[in-house]
Amino acid sequence: MQGPVALTCGEPAGVGPELAVSAWHALKDRMPFFWIGDPRHLPEGAQVVEIERPIEAISAMAHGLPVIRHMFDGDLTHGRPNLKHAADVIEVIAQAVDWTKHGDASAMCTAPIHKKALQDGAGFSYPGHTEYLAALAEVDNVVMMLASDQLRVVPATIHIPLHEAPSALTPRLLEMTIRITHTALVRDFGVASPRLAVAGLNPHAGEGGNMGSEEVAWIGPLIEGLRQEGLDLRGPMSADTMFHAEARQGYDAAIAMYHDQALIPIKTLDFDRGVNVTLGLPFVRTSPDHGTALDIAGQGKANPTSTVEALLMAHRLAAGRRA
Image (tube, rainbow, N blue to C red; front, side):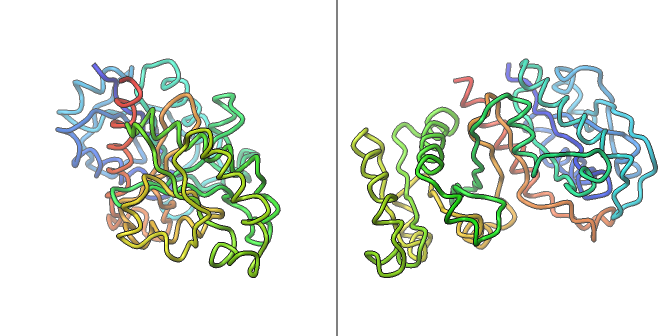
């Protein structure tokens, strides 16, 4: 029997707690998961079942949101992060990793965090979830995939200023990104022979050197070398023609060169259903593709679709990895 997915609380002042309850209503008959956090942060009147161990979530799902209690210091005000909560938010993530690494949870799904609150309140030294998870897992190389039913896309460079992307994009980084993506598509997504489309860095993929030299100098030769190894790669492709419906039929995932080149297409195509998946970890981790939404927290306005999709994808990927 497949174990439950661990859902972290994320920033308590954001929409994470209310989305956990909404997700339970949507998924209580479909898959087991449990929430780790302070029950006082959940919406008033929420149907909750407190449990002691992850495995208990399987039977508890029919009766309420399974919750493993982690008490927080300090008061909660919706929309205003409390710096006293920062250390506990970090501890919840670490606990979810531990349970997932040891098989008590089949996968983990992380609710959005407020990075500045973690930095100011607990000296959090990582740019975000992904880097912290890589450190906890003791791996050096991970990549971020944004996935939905319409598109899977992986940015080679992520949260850096645009003017730094060309220098950050090295042959080693691009090759690592391609290889990790290929492996994950086979192992987790069940794609036997992945087809990857690789975008160019420059407009029109450099237009033969007229709009930039990187494609001619090393991106094209790198792709060709990997193709000679047997990887099914196409590119470098002009990014402005990669994401229309007909083009998407020709590949299983797209490799983009920088953050917005990857995220604009998927958020345009499927804003509510996009899921963040960390590839390269020894366990499955997903996350909804949105932030803490402090401006609407506690108002019952938050759309649970991305959280529901993230939990479902975590469950599916865990099953794929087991198989």
